[in-house]
Image 1 (cartoon, each protein chain N blue to C red):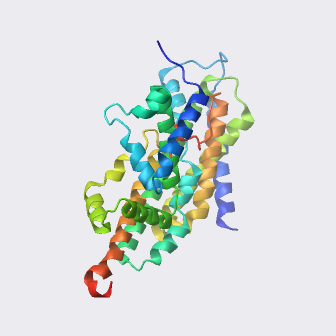
Image 2 (cartoon, each protein chain N blue to C red):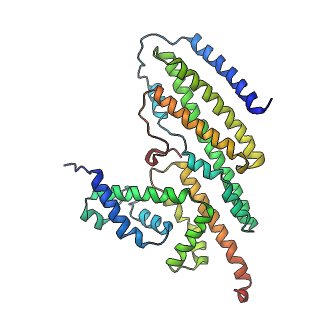
Image 3 (cartoon, each protein chain N blue to C red):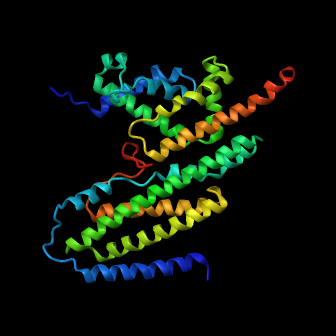
Length: 152
Length: 187
């Protein structure tokens, strides 16, 4: 039997997700990566057991979709300066060395699979392009320190 | 006489020729459009929305260019300029593709339907010609001067293509949502 999800249920699930989970993550990059990770890469469906138990699987999926789209859109249209800052916050809050993050992301480019499925092609390309440039900027900032560590 | 005026006159002339040719081919009889496969394809092609204007604006934005210049990293700057050119051309390609869809659709509708609104049809033809001309100009401007210096033209072309898409959709009575609707965005 098909269960109907009401907009109210989706909105409540969304608020719950934002207040209890996303608010605890620092910066939009962390939130984007978290939301993208709740997506099954075989079916494209979002899954979150806690949210599904409290509301319903469909309401949880709809709330995750909406939050993912909102956060991605915000990041995709943010300035390069804000994106660089967001990446720095992400590395700092996750206690990752910037050089390690840059090296891994330049090789694996995991940010390419973070856009939502219904994202427009230009929006997705703009986002991945900006992240590529942001990594290059962050790498260039590391270089003087690497050359002259005694001046750091 | 400045170039925008020349452009408007030239494409206005082309539009009149195009309308005349369409009318000569004839487009009246049964009143309702037949659901031939090519019309269904053209109708569904109209559902490919233009890229959202805020995304297009970001591609041509000056602020990012100023920021990268201040980073004193020639490699990063070169990468940035190359990427932004690539994105600008990608948007142009998408706009041209959409324009071709609108043209195909309306060429089919003009042949089949007696219930066309002449004012709307003339507007669509004119806007198609204008967008097409702007795309050519933009391609040259991006190549020679870079996306930042073409941002005014890009904004105008983006708004025009959104208007054209809206007009075409209304003419076909296709329910539409604004391009900012993320779920069906073409951008």
